[in-house]
Amino acid sequence: MLYQGSCHCEAITFEVEAPEVLEVDRCNCSICSKSGFLHLIVPLNKFRLLSGADSISTYTFGTGVAKHTFCKACGIKPFYTPRSNPDGIDINVNCLDTVPVSINITEFDGQDWEQHAHKLVHKSK
Image (cartoon, rainbow, N blue to C red; front, side):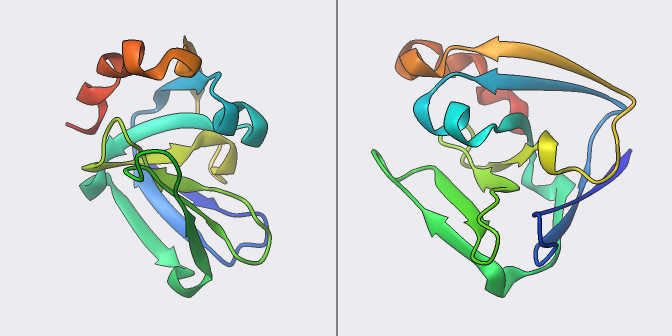
């Protein structure tokens, strides 16, 4: 299924190919819990930025592998490059404009990221 998504002000728009029933993760790490990010990690070739490349700003911390991208105007983070899958992209399901048929949420212990990261590496394959 092809989902459309955007930031709040719609300066950044994108589409992502994913199943009708989404398998997503809710992480309890500091950045995810504070931003309300609901993770849908997919291979990069399943994602297409439609507009807003010039509206994207990037934030990194720690190892610098994860590239947290957000809208310069509204501050929303609709997607980013995750540390667990730097060859893929992580979509914030809360930023999808197309409503999924169903969402199955798995809790992910990001507070103990190093011990649990291996559970995510297959998602961008």
